Structures are given as C-alpha cells and as structure tokens.
Amino acid sequence: MTTTRGAGVALWRQIVETLEREITTGEHPPGARLPTEAGLARRFEVNRHTVRRALEELSRGGLVRVEQGRGSFVTEDVLDYAIGSRARFSEWIRRHNKEPSGQVLDLRETVADPEVAAGLGVQKGARIILMERLGLADGRPVSLGSHHYPAARFPGLLESLGAHGTITEALAEAGVSDYRRRITRVSARMPLPREAALLRLPRNRPVLVSESVDVDQDDAVVGFGIARYPTPRVQLVFEPTERS
Image (cartoon, rainbow, N blue to C red; front, side):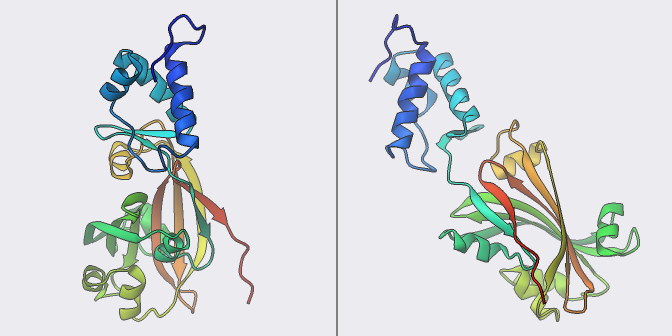
C-alpha cells in the first residue's frame, strides 16, 4: 500500500492510520519490531522524515515505542505489579505468564549514604551490601532495582547473593525465612540517561520510582530498595493491607 497525495490527508497521517490498523488487527503483534524507517519509506513512497513523523505520533499514542539504535516496536501489554506486603519479582512476572530473569549489574559492599542510612535505620557511612539488578520478563526489562542490606547483620549475604538466583533464597540462607513490605513510597520522574538505556526507554517517557522497606517477622529492617519501572510496560497496583 502506498500513500495518496492530494487526498486531503497528510502523508504522515496516512501512514499512522495504516500502521494503527495493522497493529490493532494483529498483523504486527505486541513486542514485534516494525520495519526500519528506510523500509517504511520505500513501502509508502515517502521520505524518511515523513516516516519519522508518523512513528513519533504512534509513540505519543502509546502504540509504538522507539528505542534509540534498535528501531521501533509495537508496545506490549502493560504489566500490573501488585504492591502488597509480600511483593516478589518472580511471582509477579509468572502471574502474567512470562518468564522472569535478571541481570546483576553491581554487587559489592559499600557505605550508606544519608538516604540509604535512613531507610535501613543505620548510621550514615555504615557498611552495607548493595545489589543492583535489572529485572526482565521474557527478556524485556521491566525493573531496575537497587537493593541495600546492613552488612553488620548479614556478614555472609554478599556471597549468598552472588551464588543464588533470587534475593529470597539468599536471605533464607542468611537466616531470614520470610520478610514483608513495611512501607512503599512511589513517585514519578523522567529517567536518567543510564536508566533509559538499561530499561530501553525513550528519554521522554517517565519512570515510576518506588522506595520500600522490608522487615522480618520481628519487624526488624531487612533491606531498603529503590526500584525504577518503565511506565510504558508497568503500572503499580496497591493491594489492601493484609490483616492478621
């Protein structure tokens, strides 16, 4: 199909309408990569600037996400992340019939800055364990988390985090059989350059930022986390507080 000049509808708008129809009918399924700008320009017999204008419009409408250097993709379904007292990444992803996985980006012992110290209830400069992890669903990034733990309480946790596949398993080995979320604070902002690159997120789309404190069965603080979620792919849903 080509565009029709002199039809009273801008060429880029004709491209938008055609691609919208193909996406809604399933010709381009969720997550599919669209043809390149050059390929679309040949198909519609227009220049690449016109194609780029159409893709920008589709991106603003939420049907398409444009990843710098990778191309344009049909937006996937938004994943509901239920924020309850026992939020677990793997369980969340599997509830959506997707395969959870993760990449550890940083794992080390360091010192607590004022924000982390307040979250953990320790002195500024106290030794802590930091784990930065990129969470994926079917290979797509859906979270970027910085997890902090008091080193004095968990002397072997650094090694356990390096050896185990999940944080829950590592904490169990460190003596925490169960933990729950005491509090979660959520805000939104534009992503930093590194966050946008890791989450494969356009710089003009915001991230949801959650700060959370986890405690054990005795209500002692286990960890403090800061997680960033890409708004095109994740929305946070708050569940009612569990009653004892």
